[in-house]
Image (cartoon, rainbow, N blue to C red; front, side, top):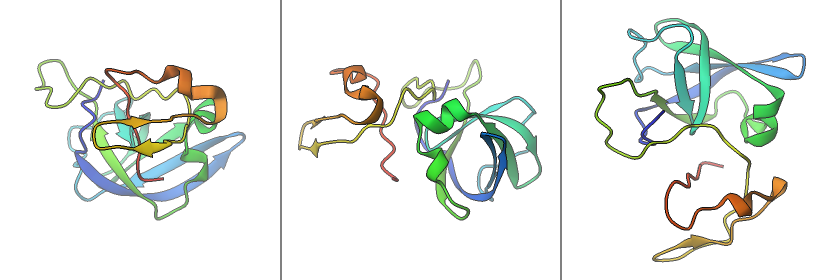
Amino acid sequence: MFTGLVEATGRVAAIEAKGGDVRLRIASDTLGFADVQLGDSIAVNGVCLTVVAFDAHSFDADVSTETLARTTLGAWTVGRLVNLEKSLRFGDRVGGHLVSGHVDGVGQVGYFGEEAVGGVGGGGNVGHWWLLVGGNKIDNSV
């Protein structure tokens, strides 16, 4: 689980095709990896990814064909700026919301109003998942 609050930024440092999957390397000088362990979850632009390798300034994550199909990750290129957040641990303060980081699909926001966002639709018919009140999360970097 995540708060949905950006903890640090990073960049896509490498993209390696692995069959239909992809291995991403995300580099950040501001996230801090001293407490990261293999198997930890890190949200990258809101998408929960599992750490499969790391060093002092970056981590690798394998991205499945399913995740590539349901997110914008498949269109990313090396150098792309990304938002990062380490997963919550029991006892951490929740300063935002509880966000799973599991993405159901990509949609398109039809409009932004002073008090509302609406007109969500797009591939995979994600509009029917839109909540009138509660936990919708939008990656506005695309």
